[in-house]
Image: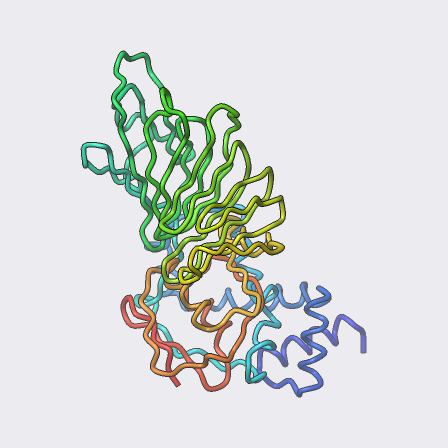
Length: 373
């Protein structure tokens, strides 16, 4: 039998859940080596052709444009990326079929969604606002460009009034903004950033962050850039870094990609590129520094979920924020661990098909995701 034909048979047996333990081990190894990519992609595309017509119509009418267009194609190779995912679950058992999900109850992936709150308290939906000028205040013009990004530009003015704006993303939303100093910020879901509309006449560039954001800070040696969260402060001159400060994660993670940053809480630590500072909410302000997993820290910005020995609770917290669903545990499996990458541009049911393993199933009802037997 030719190698290619053998690979096709192996993939089909995987899809039919007929692999023996020895075949499963071989399948996972070949997948890791990329030798089954063509066969898996062909099988996935074939499955897509016979999808329910009503579900396809519903998705066309309701699914938003992918945030990262280049990654839209990644959804079609979902099974390739995650073929060995369940291999790392605590039970080591193979996948079962997910509980049937009606298309109307499925959850579409997130997209560009945010709200701008001006200094006077008025709000502008950046999701619905057209391109062009949105507002002008305190000598600053606020516009939305053709790429959907928010841009602040100083206009001639005699005012020295200091005004603050807040950009907030809902669950299932992300947004990019260019601050008045040229710094670029990418906000993850369920996050917000508060900042002055201009840094002129200030001794520092200070912003307040809730949730998660990636920063590419414009260099200015005379004006340090400071990111303040509820637990810590990060001071930089010009650098690239990511901060994850979600309250339900129980810790703040600051990951440095380029330049240097000073992280301050109960103690002060200076990070070098490739390092990560971790501050537990109950650690009495003590910051720990360790080598960073850049791929994991930047996965959300690059359009992926990246799991490395993640617990079920950790995985579902991320899905909850991105798909805007409430997770309800009717059963729990605290010892299971997950490894792999999943594109963020696919609907929730596709992700759950991959996560499901022997003894645990998922059910979607409205905006609730149930973990069931």
